[in-house]
Structures are given as C-alpha cells and as structure tokens.
Image 1 (cartoon, rainbow, N blue to C red):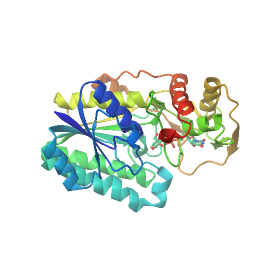
Image 2: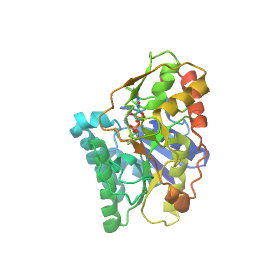
Image 3: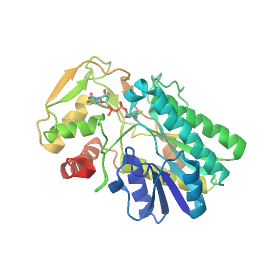
Image 4: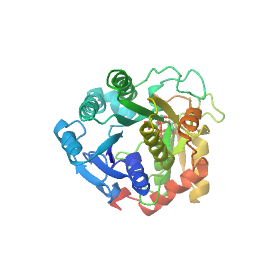
Length: 327
Ligand code: UFG
C-alpha cells in the first residue's frame, strides 16, 4: 500500500513526505518541479517528474504502485500573482487538479487529503475563524482552492470519494534539511530572516493603521511539521473510515507583524531594520484559527505552538541554507 503525494518537492509537501517515510509509509512523489526542489524530496520516496494534470502519467503511477490514498499539495500559491494571472491559477489549481481527482477516482483511489487554505474564508466576520465561517474568497487563489473543496464534496456524494481538506493558516518554520525556499519570496518570516542575514536592507511593514494592538496585521503562525503531522493523522482518519471533513490548522494565537519582527531579533541577535510602508492590497487585519475540530477529529497536538520556537527552526534553516536548496 502506497501514498501518492503531488507537490512532494514543495515546502509543506517535502516535510510531509519526510514524516510519512519516517512513519513507515511507502511514498510516491509526483511533482513537475515548476516551483519545488528535487533536493527537498526524501531519497526513500519514489519520484516521478510530471504534471498532476497529465492523466497518462497518473494512470501509469496507479498501475505501477499499490496507491490507496493521495495527498494533494501541487498548486500555485501566490495571492498577488493570482489576481494578475487568474487563468494561470484556474488552469493549474482547478483544471489540472480536477483531472487528477478524476484519474484517481476512476483508478479506484478513494481517499484524498487536500491542501486548502484560510484564504477560502475571505474577510473574516468573526474571530477566531471556525470551519463553519462563511467562505467568500477575496482572490483567484482562494477561489481556486474553494472550487476544489466544492468538487470534493460532490465527488463524495456521487462516487464515495472521501477527503479531508486542511485549511492552513500561516505556514512557517523548518525541519533540519527541509525549509522554505520560494522564488520570489513573499512570506513574512523568511523575508525577516533574509534581512537578518544581510540579504535585504530592511523588512517592510505593510500597514500600521489596522485595528490591532500595535496597528500591524495579526496572523496565526503554524509550524510546517505540525501541518505535516495533520496530513498523517488525516490519512489515518480516512483509512479508518472517517467521513469527509474540512479542518482548520492554526495554533489559535495571533501575533502582529511587529511582534514577529521582535521575536526574530531575539532569536537571531541581529538588528533587523524595519520600515513602515503602505498597506498591501488584499490583507485583512486579523486571521486566527479555531482549530478545535483538528484536535477533536484528528487528535492533532501541535509540537511547536510557540512563535519563538517556530522562528528558531526557520532561522536554523536560513542560516545554514542562505541561498535555499542551492546553498
Ligand atoms: N507582511 C509584511 N511585510 C512583508 C511580508 C508580509 O508586513 O514583507 C505582512 C503581511 O501584510 C501580513 C503578514 O505579514 O499581514 C503575513 O504575510 P504573509 O505574506 O507571510 O502571509 P499571508 O497572511 O498574506 O498569507 C498566508 C499564505 C496564504 C494563505 C494565508 C492564509 O501566504 O497562501 O496565509 O492565512 F492564504
């Protein structure tokens, strides 16, 4: 019995592959390496370079391996780019993903763990955000993930194809040998740490007039290994007959941008210059998860609930891999 992981060369995918292998799973990775890094794939996984939307490749993998489940990460993730190039996002994150789901379903694979996002909620109406919060995404990236959540509901009703959609809040942190390496980088913590390394002059703080304690945006930062763990638990849940579910993944603690910068200064010992600039389009003031369902349904217990520890693991990665996987 094997697990197919699409996007297993990416940031969260590669960490999940590592944890799956450590837990004794046979893992097959499918990644087109458009953004992932071949160096990130655990050598114990069987790797296919190819596109999840290519029916022949996926059907070939299903014939060659005894795949019972799929963890689907492969997607474009840049919110701003999705606003400028929606066709690119709907093509990859929806059309190709639908081709994947169809090939899996027709090939008899009936369990899927889906990499979804808090971006499917849009502007929050209450805080913390639980899974029953209305979903009105604010950008094509969020809509593309929302659409696949919708497809999965209908696949369950019609074909008995069961899934867990994991709605991540702010993924961050690293494991030894597995860290964040996006091009271009847009996320707060890696950008702060690149500033600490002297690769950037200053971190820009996007907006200081939000209705938050210090005027900067509040986010729920969750460690990539805790996200990975939730995928393993979701897989076990589905294999034991659990019904389809949508589950938030966050620590339930909100930190402002300024608090994250201050924490990084303590962890790195570096000055880390910061400049205050205008708000970034599309940012909401608060995004904090109610993750009680993950605890109740999956018995998920985050191992890195503290921001300081999360930033320390990210710093360990960035200081040893100043140029990412190419270091
Ligand atoms: N920020 C800065 N300066 C920067 C970069 C970010 O001030 O240089 C701020 C942002 O304005 C935001 C916070 O830091 O307030 C976090 O920004 P990120 O870009 O790291 O993350 P986002 O909250 O924008 O988005 C992340 C993922 C999305 C996901 C969302 C859901 O990138 O894919 O979390 O919570 F949808």
